[in-house]
Image (cartoon, rainbow, N blue to C red; front, side, top):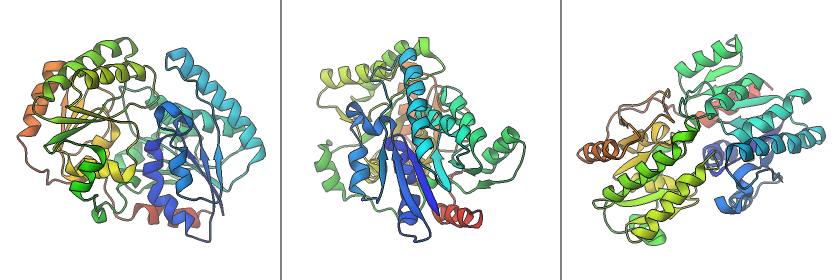
Length: 367
């Protein structure tokens, strides 16, 4: 069975990994990686190199991003991605193509495949993120897909409502949590030395723009900067940098100013990679920001999360989440509250055992 896997960013590739490893080692499948988006962006770490290190038999690299991140550039990148993938789908055929999540580049690649009748399998559909335009892209991808692997039963019901049938929809849990109970972090001293992290408690921080509040992002970035400056007086701050979203550069600039003003209190990481990122989550005191990993993964590491603003609003949450407004004082107060908690011992609503094996079993049955 010939399988294509669309990956447009470091984030979705990390989620895919347990599935990719199993497909790669299963003689039933012929695997081809289709890498595009920020994987080919030098300003985002050129993570195509990380994919190549994993030694797949076939990797297609498709460059289609414009460097700017204003609304016109994002729309132009979307159009360019459609054009590039129109050529790609015209000359490449697959029995099934995996797609994941809600990025605009992913949506563009999939929209281009519709006239060609490409059979897509969508992972993480049915979710809601009211503060991000990705909400629209996610539903577009769902409507273009034939198989759906969702993370909770609530999301399964949403996909049913979207496409009007329950056929081909499976509640498998979050793929990123596959084998999470067996995860072994990098030894602490080695990890701290590798990334020059101060030998003290630290917060793991990721902020992305609220793409449904374009005119507010300048203010939000300043509120974030002010809050993190105060929080850094008590916690070392490890920041993973924003994705290539509309106005992501506004947050990058604010973060880089923090690093310049407080060089000994901030560490900026362009691309951790999955093992390093999970190790950072394991050793962090708390998580701060508005990224999906805080919602989906942090509970499995026993971490409390200060979830800021509306970007993740609408996603099902475990009981480790403290929500707050995108405002300096609200963030500082929520962080102080989270710091008083010990390890989170509750459940993760996104966890199910053996997600990758479940997906492979279903794909074989539907082949």
